[in-house]
Image (cartoon, rainbow, N blue to C red; front, side):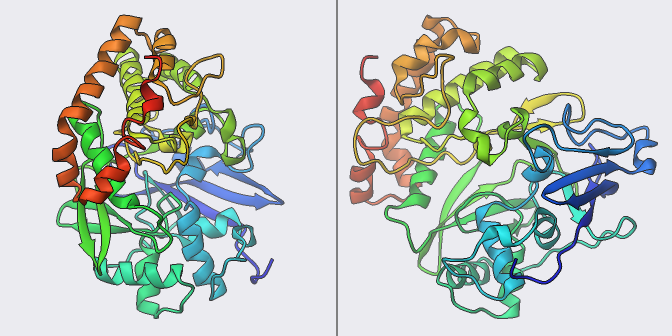
Length: 415
């Protein structure tokens, strides 16, 4: 440990369904490498209290240990910073960042307390059970992008830029990103990285554009430019039209009772079983999940791990969030696999024929599965040029994406 003594407790505040201000729900405590949670008595006494997530943290008295195999409850971990936010916080706390910086130098509670309050979902973390002090900052996209670039380069930046980065430290993902307010709209700005070997931001822009055109329920996105770099503006799905209101959600990783170390065990069939048992409109949701699997294969998104799927949680039932983080991935050869198995036999090859074979898992017949696949293939072919224009892809970028990531021949082999 290279830092001074770190906090060993934090208070969890929650925006209850329909609420515009948070209330304290309970307390996190750190003991060795385990983070425990205890509901507050006043919270348990509220008639509108909801569990942070079930079956993980039921509404009951006493200190609750994470489920077997986890060191912190998944619904809490979902609200914490991922790789990019951890880098930001490491730089703030330690005063520097380098290739040798170890995220394990800081505890989970430190990351929760040091990250911004405008985090994903409907939770925040405070040092006090009585006073909520939001950790927010107002900065322009240019200021935030400049701070992100300096952090990536390992260069020092001013306290003002440090605070700009704090505002984006509470959202997940490994790539540089910041949070923005555009009037009533809440946005995530995904930034180009100095290490990008291909146009990652524009590749995600065209995939998201095609997804919406193919009928996938996907977040709204827009490509723009800042300081000479591409930026993807993503509308947040965890905020509503009501100012101050937030929506709680959990990742598929949490729904499956796993963490990042166990993510390789996550499968689509296991997620489908949870949808059948616990989701609103399970038949419609299973069809939507199948369509997303197919689309990921069509556009070469093999980064479809369980952290990149999520569901809204209202205290009793789940409902699928809009699709997000659909980004064609670089590939050197033709054969590749999806991050999660598609069929119960472990089949995960990025091939549409395997989706047909697994159709019954998603409450579809082979004919129904083929209808979804054929529709997507038609849309990607017909809408490619318009979607590429919207994503501002150059001629060269289109040529490199088409047939390599977008509709790679391996995807339709045997279909």
